[in-house]
Image 1: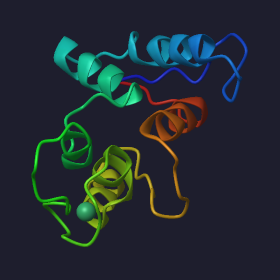
Image 2: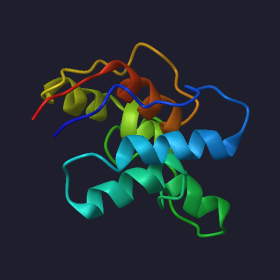
Image 3: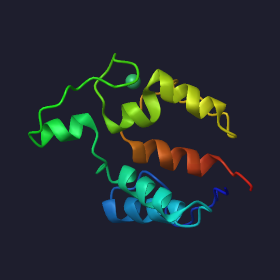
Image 4: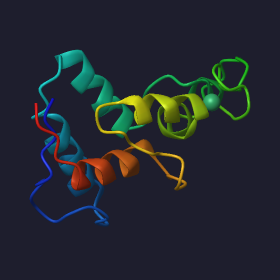
Length: 122
Ligand SMILES: [Zn+2]
């Protein structure tokens, strides 16, 4: 898998959601992963994956705690980045990422941060 560190354009943190969404897509599209992974990443960047927190906000009564650690609400940021179990996954990955140092406001913020700093070759 290759992540391209040069996302081009205006960089992250812009005030326009269109620019941010465009950068997100540009970081996902060139990945050498199956299309379903790209779609999952795109959905995560747009916070539309069906986490327990999101289901509850839509009126579906499910238990809200994370199914792995049982310590926090299952939000997208928690289950994909902040959970202690997820931390182990990312640390064991080929990129040896440590995700627990910082509080991320969204998956997209985390994703844009790692794609801007990592350049991973095949
Ligand atoms: Zn958890």
